[in-house]
Length: 401
Image 1: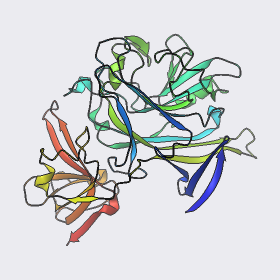
Image 2: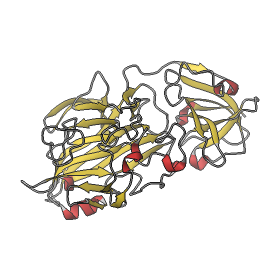
Image 3: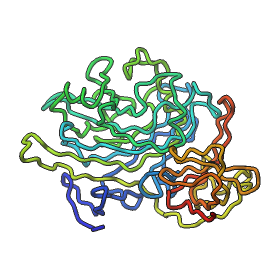
Image 4: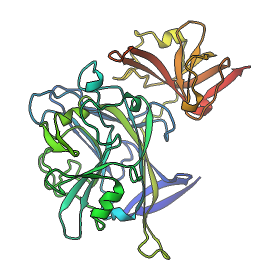
């Protein structure tokens, strides 16, 4: 790997160059062009963090940016919580020049009740949002990526939760909502947006006003590119092309999850013979201040012990240390195509291991190191109560045979 100094649209940063292009680590001590904003929910619980240890999987680094919106309820139209992570580094880039726009999210099983049923689950992860100028000297628009598609009330899919997902926001099947293009907005793929507004550019928003003001598209970070979760206003509305989308704000009520590994690249190909790199491929890695190095050795019985809570976060994940477990790989639940299997150390209390890209066969004895997470979905049928150890493939070690 080589270290180089690069300038992207006038912003100077130290980056590492490797297989992912330029990798920029963003942490509380090294924010670069990134800024955060938090609007507290009236009933509390809103917070964000550059987490030292996030659920592990096929994502860059050990940490990630964590967001929790809290509970607002029907106290007032503006009672909900919001979390924003934004940058204005890419203002001026034409949408048509963007060749890569990807990010990863992890969403906990959560919703607008302490013990939500499926109808109350959150319905989108943290999502990418762009302030755009639709044409030269033209009006502003607000683009909102919809990673889980155009879904409404009761359409939540638990299969999206408790796992890392990677989103190609400019893929042919991507879904976007463009606010302000008409009274009810426009929905479509990235290609649909480009066809309607071929000269649109990412644009610095006007000075910030009220958090629920949408015309023109203010952002509380003052940035044109944001990762955001939380409704700006609570009211039934004609949004996301679901008319009307009753209680649309519930899709992010009491949300808890992460975002990481944001990649962007832009190349001007107006002259196909002489393409011009506008933004070199750059990946942003969100990390905490104190990388986790400690490992705790545990039995399966200890992993199930609900009294061990001092080391856990709001979502019952061990946040200060890795956990190492030993066990025999069981036939039941073995699905190596999905990177999952169960281990039992003889206690009769199996722990699920999630290790995408890793391999262990039924009957093998392994030692696995990763992040330990408790999952409880009481309103599923049948109820789900799991302990999951998420591991990097290299952290699953075969010890027998």
